[in-house]
Image (cartoon, rainbow, N blue to C red; front, top):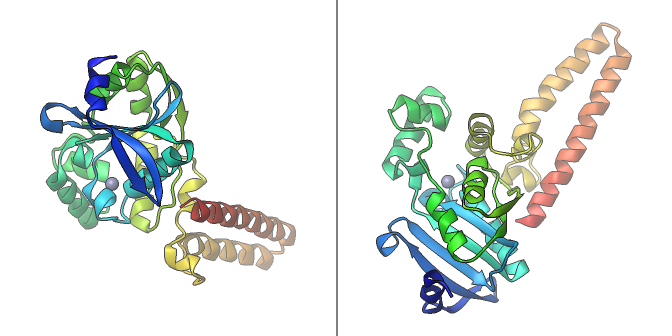
Amino acid sequence: MTTAGSDLAETDHRFTRKEHDLRLRVLELGDRGEQGHLLAFGEVADDCLVRLHSRCLYGDALRSDDCDCGPELDATLDMFQAEGAGVLIYLEQEGRGAGLVAKARGYRHSERYGTDTFASYEALGYPADCRTYDLAAQRLSALGLRSVRLLTNNPAKIDAVHAAGIAVTPVPLLTPVHGRRARKYLEAKRTRRGHRIPIVYIPVVGFSARSMRGRWTSHLGVELIVPIAILCGLMVHFGQLGSAAGTALGALVAFAVAARQRARFARSK
Ligand SMILES: [Zn+2]
């Protein structure tokens, strides 16, 4: 057994969540865990689920709606518990590696100037993203893993684990996200950092929790229904009845798909 394995054995205990037990072992990354912790749930073996998760106080602990970190962590643990195993590497890389104060300053800048969080960081003199995943990948390798299913939309994580000599099967993490700011955050991650978030997912998650209780206040409705209605009205006005009918039908199909996905996300939450 490796040194990492021996350290893990000393921490072996039971973890209970949602009334289900899982065996859990913990390993420090860096002195006293200053760079994070590796948490091995259940019996870890090749092809197990793995999540590299950077610390986010607002999302993970305070349950903020402004990012997808909390729902990502929830989805990860749900999947670990469903499979009975998984490795979570929780990295002390708050604020994309720049810290909580930098993150707060970035939010403030975004509120004042309407920029996305990456542009705000750059304007404030912070690197857009200085997180690294090399140490986490090395620890996975030290566990003896040669292949993993990596829960991520982030190509940088896939590259780091692959570079450690581990075969990676990416598993996209699609989570219910509420609020306009979170949606903008996802859009920025997709367009600025190449995160593999399906485009359809962005507008679908625009449905707020309030709209899911029956009130027609979703972003999707506000942003798309009114322009589509105006467009159809103009087409009818100018005698383009066929085009108007086609547009309305297309919109109806899109909304039906969106509603179906919304229900799926709600069920998976
Ligand atoms: Zn977050």
